Image 1 (cartoon, rainbow, N blue to C red):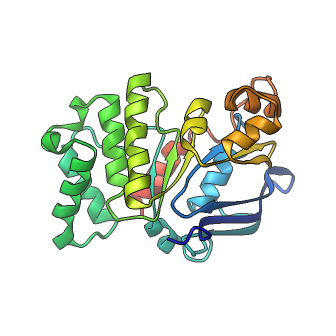
Image 2: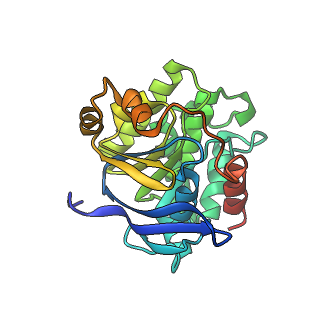
Amino acid sequence: MPENKSSISVKNLSKTYDHTFKAVDDISFEVPAGSIFAFLGPNGAGKTTTIKMLTTLVHPTSGSITIDGMDPTRDPHGVRQSFGIVFQDPSLDDELTAYENMFFHAGLYGVPRGETAAKIKDLLEFVELWDRKDNLVKTFSGGMKRRLEIARGLLHTPAVLFLDEPTTGLDPQTRNYIWTYIKKLNEERGLTVFFTTHYMEEAERSAKHVAIIDHGKIIASDTPANIIKSASAANLEDAFIKLTGRKIREEEAGSVDHLRTMARAWGRR
């Protein structure tokens, strides 16, 4: 892919609720194709609303979005085919095997039946779960489930993978293991990765570019090193706190259930 091509382009994007509250206020950013991009912000900053707009679940009030060259407001089905998504909350069927979860998802995405078996084998081997393909998911550890969800999100060969806090609740060893797969996907398959996290060290270590949103506006957008330098901070976590403050935030309106809502919406497609 050409380096100057953007997988995600956001221009002057806003979302207003009840004609008064601006959850997202005129933000713009670009995600280069084949890059790992971290979208960070405290609770209530507008991060969740932005992700909902990018993934076709909320219609913008104004501004524009293109994902893999398509507009989510005009071609939501096409856009959904262009990305995979891993939710923060588990969305696997625990009563099915790993293979059955993959097979069912392939059907939802319209993966040609003649290609399904080979794709499932390739991806389960990639995340080192092929030998557990016939085991019920309820027997899997948290890290194994996350790896299966990543494999499932790649079945239809998307251009972009959205990861919403993919390592929340995992121990440090498993978090590092998950990031090994994410980086491998990016490097070997040219996949664009857009992720959110509250673990600043993950963003500092893995992202080529970081955007920080607060009070609905992008307050910093650069490489982790440049953000750290401009904030005169020791690391990205220190820079994040300097930029957003130390006050504990309330959850963004509607964010408590947003992942379950997203999962239900995907199931209805």
